[in-house]
Image (cartoon, one colour):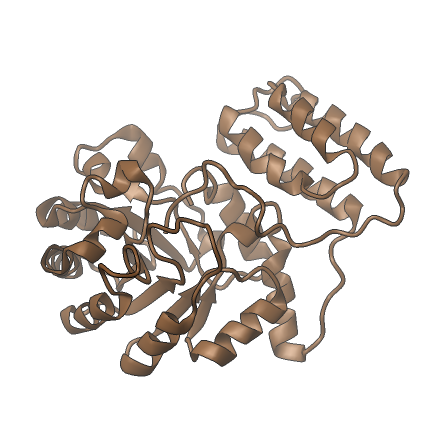
Length: 332
């Protein structure tokens, strides 16, 4: 997810049991022209493995060159985004727009599979608008050209993140293909994950927005699937300590000393950290203060205030955040 699934969130999710993490979607043109910002997306640690590098684009030659470049930094797989509905991506013919042009989609997948030295997967949507484009048609082509696995988000591109996810196309693809089908969409609890496996027959479940501010979702799902038991949610103190750790990791990744109170807080970190506050007592005040935070010390002070607010509300219980507006979050 653009702006969110950076190395810090990936590390935290892996620590909590995520089986595979994926980079932010990265422009093939940015890689082709060696754009510094695009190349930055290809930085990860060994602790994040297995990791997929996700690229997007509509030009087969450019996508092939991007795949060759990405292969050099040795991800465990390359994922082609064919599900992003955000206009600045889709109007270039990339992302979910490839659902509307099966021939171009086939050419892109062929080019990437031939150029990559690691397995290639794709992520898509159920269709463009319910009439144009079909995840199953795209997935059948993907299987023929050598794509290793297909992820399907249970909404059309036109839906964005509105409405409920339809898992039926995921089940149809899982029944029709010999390659693994990964289900995605509206999995916010262990019960959701179990239900998706049961209803669709998918090989794996991908969790996206529900992990924002809640990396524990992976721990909870794994434990429930293996034992049938539901773990208690993290305590308020555990949530606050995770915010503190997330902020300090971001500062360290940016090359500063996380023990220095006046270490600058990157602007993008405010959007990441704000998700942890959802549902907490004093959350509105904490998010407002976070919006004004410029250095790490500002975050530490607002967390101290938030701890005091939580201490005054001992009956608080956290609830899954899926369903709240998530402006600025977009990929597939």
